[in-house]
Length: 182
Image (cartoon, rainbow, N blue to C red; front, side, top):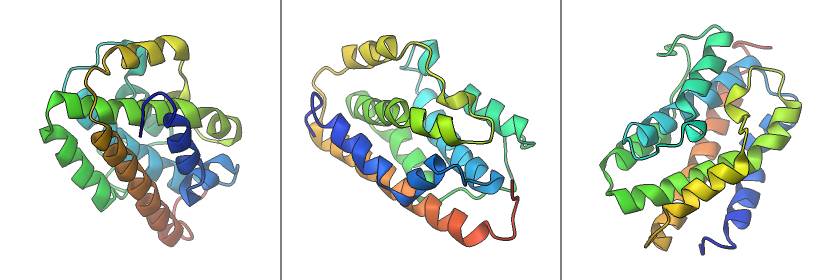
């Protein structure tokens, strides 16, 4: 995935996932949205705990926690499932070297920025985590750190995200019927 032109392709692939289509449909219930947020929060904690991101606006963990709190969940979210792929991803990004970590930051945050508008328009639940006040500044900051980026790791980052979205969708599809409906 060449960073100059393939992020749009990555965003398109994420937009086509059943989970993203559900989130953008306006039919996402409280359990589905909170499960998505809970898994996103785990991923962002892993990325942000490495302390290499210094731009505050990019930080998503606090915003994800606020959204979950507004929906009645504490930070541990014991009632929400954490996908196996999320747990594996957290371990993986906690251990990789910094240049590879930047590939994950680049792909994940650009996908977050690129997919946030359609979701924000249709979601009926707290969604402060989707707010990026200055996307150009965020994009510039991330791109400044893209020195000697490992393109294979960028492809890997996208695959982690796609697998995560698919596994989260499976979880929310199976469990949402009798769970926290909106």
